[in-house]
Structure formats: structure tokens, C-alpha cells
Image (cartoon, rainbow, N blue to C red; front, side, top):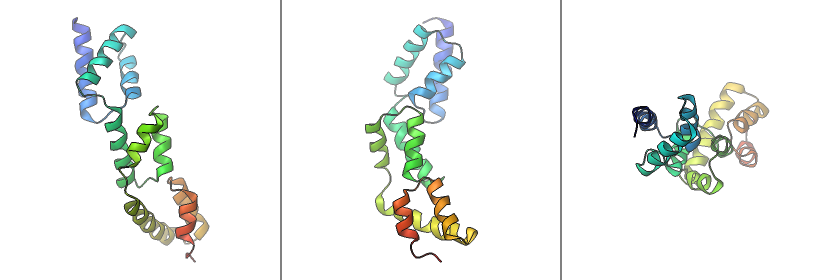
Length: 146
């Protein structure tokens, strides 16, 4: 392994160790760092073999974080993961990180909070749909708003 390849590998290892990354992000970083395609492929393979890159781990981490920290609904999480080129089966596995009861409790909590701010049931419903919660579920839970 030549010096520049070792340097690139170390940079990517640090990049992936800082937080979970998907393959797309790692590829973008390699391009940004100026890696030629052959070197990039070799580094990419080594990152996967050494456990620095794992699409499922990344997707699960994103689903948990976007839901619990940012209070995103499933549709917004799915869109985010699709934008990172995560496959549908892995997205479904990642959504398994969100328990139905916890999801519904979070929606109820947000519904109350947003409605206190907005005062208008239509604006409340719209805000939660924008957050990525399924419209049918939002309408069902918002039916008692006045």
C-alpha cells in the first residue's frame, strides 16, 4: 500500500469512526479527497471488511436518531434513507428500531405540543405531516382537536 493510499484509508477510517456512514457518504468523501477509482475501490473494500462501513448499522442508527432526537416520522426517515441510496429491505429493518407504541406516543405528544403553538387544527396537522408522520395516522390522532 503506497503512502497516499494509507493516508486516504486513515482519513476514511476516522471519518467513518466519528459517526456511522453509509456507502454513498464514504464514496463522496473519497471523491472529495481526490482518490482515483481503483484506489477508492480498494479502500472501500477494506472499510467494509474492517467494519467501518455497514449499511444496516447506519440505517438503524439514522432511524433511531431522527425519530428520538429530531422527532421525524417514518415517511421522512424513509425519504432520508432513500436519498442516501439505502435499499428498501435495509430501510424496513431500520424502521424496526421504532416500536409502534413509542411511535404513537411520540405523535400524541407532538400533536399536543404543536397544537398549543399553532392553535389551528389544520396547521397542526400540516406541521406533523411535514415532520414525516403518515397523514392517516395524524388525522386519526387529531380528530379530537378543537
